[in-house]
Length: 261
Image 1: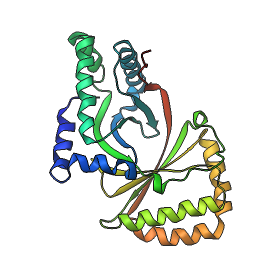
Image 2: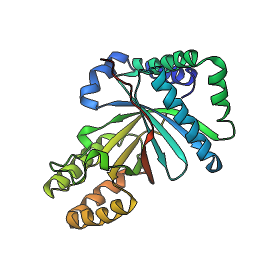
Image 3: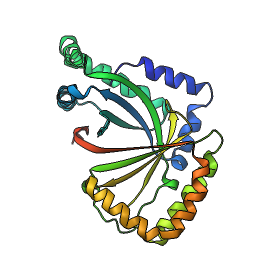
Image 4: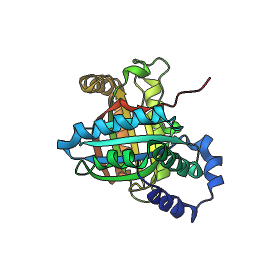
């Protein structure tokens, strides 16, 4: 949750190519836009990092920070804070509101909190993702309630340039296959917009815990059968690289603004 310079640079690069209004018009078709802050944390500093973030959450509540964020952590000691945004023009509003929060906290308190990140955060970056509902699968009768899905498994699909449309079309075939088998676990797809190694798509599967994910994955694999094998043969030639990561949703590191009556 750092200054506005990086985000201004990101927005400036994109505005050279696209009008903000075009992104706003595509929102309904393209899905929710997300600003993501990725913090790589020193394993020895995890406790201090989380303690500072929780203090920021408490201060956001106290001073009525207006924008929601969701906290996540992964096994490789990365922490991701995701902010839903309406369009690119709204991104800078998040940082302006953060500057206002710092003023309400007072310079000394704000700097003292950030000082505690020294030696704890090894690197950080911002990027933008967009939800891809047309590539995602929502079961009619989900096996788990939303609040039960605390664990997630991520697949990062890196594509050669120009293969996006083909990959998106094949993902719809996967959705159709899942529907035909009445799979009870959903899938969520996101596409890189800015700040990622594009073209990239991220597939998220969410379950109760690690054991539940891997046991259920075996069940799903059995249900999909040979049709899944055939579809993978069509999918793999479009992929340059696949990376995988496990992680957890962190409600203790998340923040929801309190609606005033």
